[in-house]
Length: 377
Image (cartoon, rainbow, N blue to C red; front, top):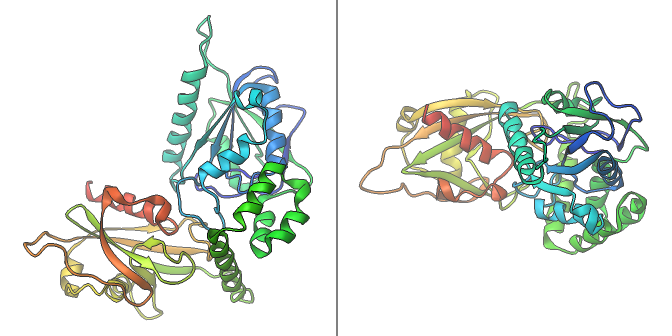
């Protein structure tokens, strides 16, 4: 079963609810709402079985689709709307009337993620819970608590829980890996694990240009990781990123190569063996945007810096980045001229309000939001 965490980390195999409720759970017939968090990419029969069990235990099922509202990637290839359609297509109209499917974005911050989950659940409860006696709703989480990525089950002590046990070994990850290696072969190999509507969606998606791009990216990532397979220790990469802001705009580049070709990103890159992180940030900024502002002025504009080190923030492997917020002062000459260079196909000044998270590379949208918040501190 796929389980969502504050950053959408995927868990292990398919899980089914145990016959005995977990510690702190409501009785089997006592739930008004059960909450199921996952990424569901793709939605498979393990997810379906758990959801049907949830409908037998509770009056209403709230499905929160993690890692929503971000650019397509090998790990998250399908939009929220596509995932929701796959889920809803697997149920009868009567069952669908008892299910609410909502997006949940990756926050990389437990408190913010908990707030989002609470808000989503509260909104559904307000809409569907109107008891004549005014009694409070009985809410529970359904999920597998024996995996390192599902520690979120302990984040909501005010709710009950239905614990799940692993069965059969069905997991979204190998399905996804096989699908992007060879769609036709994967759909035949995994046909017993996929609802018919999901198999049809995957077959149709495999004919799109998006599939071709993601398959190319998947092969690139596999080759990239294989290059480090014989290292004595799992590698950790260090990068630096520049968040340059001016008059409500942020400086972005369009990525030229894989992964994330065509996506918007912050100027940045890997730190050299013999340079400081700040120096690497400024070097990459100037190389990728051809920004002509002198180094001294850029250094003088640094207002904050922060490390972003979530273990799964990059599909390439363990990558830690330090982002620097550079605030430039407005001048009568307007925005400094920029153009793409090195790894960047193009560079542009973009209004902060116009930044679309579904066009941003990896966690760069989150980095921008975090660094802008620091500028107001």
